[in-house]
Image (cartoon, rainbow, N blue to C red; front, side, top):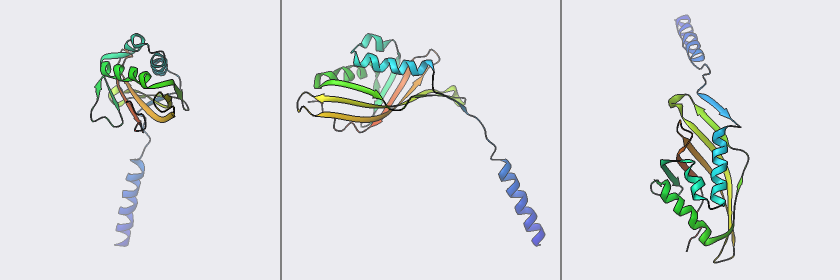
Amino acid sequence: MRKIILTTALFVFGIAAFSQQEEKNGTIYIKHAYIDVINNTVKAYLAKDEAANKLLYSDTARFWITGMPKSISIADAFKMWSSDFDFYDDVKVAVVGYPDYLHYLDGDAKIVQSWWKWSGKSKKTGLVITIDYVQFDDFNSAGKITRESIYGDFSKMIKE
């Protein structure tokens, strides 16, 4: 009886070991045209160049940031971004580390993940506010951003 149990256990263990084979689901790039697109969105934001930014997003793109109950249209996001300069001077956005472009085989997903540090000097209080955040941008096959999601603590970024 012990031989049967031992043989069965080894058989089950063998099946489990072989079922854990490595499998690729895509490729990660450190340099890619979609990373350049993200860098250009930051340049356009800092230059307050909405026309340049419009060229980088699909017309149906959606935007979401931590604290929002639901995503908004990219047109509404452009308005929100431009209002940053109404309340803050010396606005800067610095890349932290480097962005990665992730191309997943499953669903042909195209995503750039990037880490940033936003800072600005409040026109009301004179205090410099710094916010660390991570950003995920999804791309369509035409190379346009279709969805942007940003995670960070923006609670200290007061607009009044």
